[in-house]
Structures are given as C-alpha cells and as structure tokens.
Image 1 (cartoon, rainbow, N blue to C red):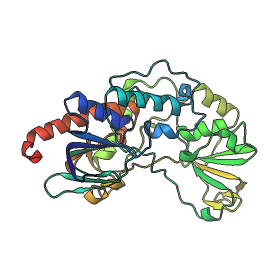
Image 2: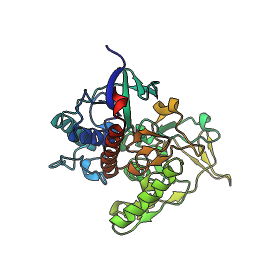
Image 3: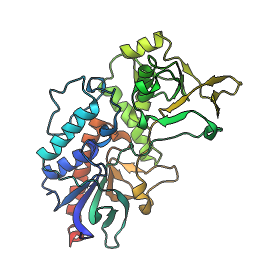
Image 4: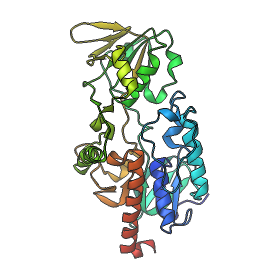
Length: 359
C-alpha cells in the first residue's frame, strides 16, 4: 500500500458531521479519493448510532435531523434506531458516492514539514492541506472517579455499554447522571429492577413548553462562547435542560425520577453519602456523558490552558487548516449539518488563498 498519499482534505469520521462535510465537499467540486478522503474507524456505516441500545426505537429518538440532500422518510418508529439510521447512512454514502474508507483508525495528525498535515492511520498515511475532524464523543465515555470505586463487588457500566432494560431484571440499580440518557435508562429499567436510585451532581432542570428557535440559538451561543475561550465544551442539552415529556411527568409522579444528591464514596455493597446514609446496589450505571475524541490531534498541541481547543466557528483558532465539526456547539444533528457546510466554505477559501501549497 502506498503511503503519504496527497489530497486536499482529509475527513476523519463518518457520522453525521463527517458525512455532512463530505457531502458539501463533493457538492462544491471536490472529488472523492482524488481531492479528499473520508476515514472511519467503524466497520460499517452509522457512526455512533450503530451502538445505540436496542430499546431505543426510532420513534423515541429526539431531534434526529436528516443529512443534507436526502431525507429519511418512511422509517418504522418501532424499529431500533440503530438499524434505521445505520441503513439510512449506508444509503446516503452510496447515493452520493462518498467512498468512505473503513475500518481505518487514525492514530495521529502531525506537521508534515511542508505546510501540509500528515495523517497517520492503520490504513496508511495521507498528507493534506486541510483537515476536518468529525470524530464526535462516543469513543470517549466519561467515567467519574470516587473513593472506594475499585472495591465495589457489583457491576459498573457506562451508558455506552447499556444493553437494554431486561439485563437489570431483579437487580438493585443506581443510575448516575441527570441528562437525557440517564432519565431514559432509568424509566426503562424501573419496571424490571428490584429497585432504582437516581443520583445527580446538580438538580435536574426540566423544560416546559416548546423549545423554540430563539431558545435554541441562545443555548448554542452559550456553548459557543466556551469553545471560543478555549474551555472544554458542554453539551447543548446540558444548557437547554430536559423536555418535560409525558414519560418524564409519569416518572416523577411514580417516584422513579426522585433525584438524590451525589454520593461521596462507593462501598463494596453500594454507595454512601457524607451523612453516612447508604444504599445497597448490584449495579452502578454511569450515565455521565462523553468527552470529545480528539486525542489524534495531540501532536499538534492545540489545547489551551483551560483544557479545551479554542475555536472560531468550526475553525481551530491556532491553526486555520483544521476544523472540528460536531464539536461543542455543532454537536447535534442539525448543528453538524450546518457546521459541515461552514467548514467546507472556509476550507475552499483557505485553499484558494494558498494555491502554491498544493505544488
């Protein structure tokens, strides 16, 4: 296999953000495998949707926005979302001839020494004049650390490993996390489990009424301000709060969504609070979110003292060749679509201003 193949743009990741970026590259004249390449570490299409738990049917998915140029229509709401959306992504890749290369693990992106970036991967190396990193967060589940955690005799798992509610039948379950995943898991598990306990660091914020465009823009602006300052991004959902759906209302009324403050240690048999109160449990389910999967960019030293990567729109402030799509304010399906278009527009301008870099 040849190494150091030259392209104008490398796109890393073929989830919503990566496919949106690839679509806009192709639509504006870039040719797949000649001008740009899409590298994806998954064995098949679907991005993070491939890994969603079986009980998350398509009808339960909130805010799934179609990829640019092709709607998702006629999907059975009772089918698992992993199946529906994986098939849709597969059809999308084939329809637009995006030629995603997989499975390819990108190990590092570093300077090539001639103004280009060197992308090193399990599938060989590419040099590129620009890079779109659309790697999302699924590969970096966040596991908090608490005293005594290693002594717990039960099972600990992250929401990324959630197998569906039947696996918790007859067990005492502690669910940690106040986001959408935590509440969804808790509501599913409660009818099967012997008992459930819901623990969050902060009291949950439930949003009543419709979430209009103005509120959405305000929430995205808050996340955008963080990444503009070089701080780690928060999710848009963490800013907007959780919609007070009928299922949530029922869960509150039934006492399932009875939030407890965060425990301060884990014991061999459960969890314990500062006042000495204990709850015995068989399982701790960490619905504690994810962090951006950007370790492959470490050789470029893009992180700011605040711990994040400072951004100007989708562009890394310290290096205009690099765009992060699906990062921070664009970490939503509709946000990823818009960010893909914006990144391609900026990259086209960059390449036009530096025509000799391709020589």
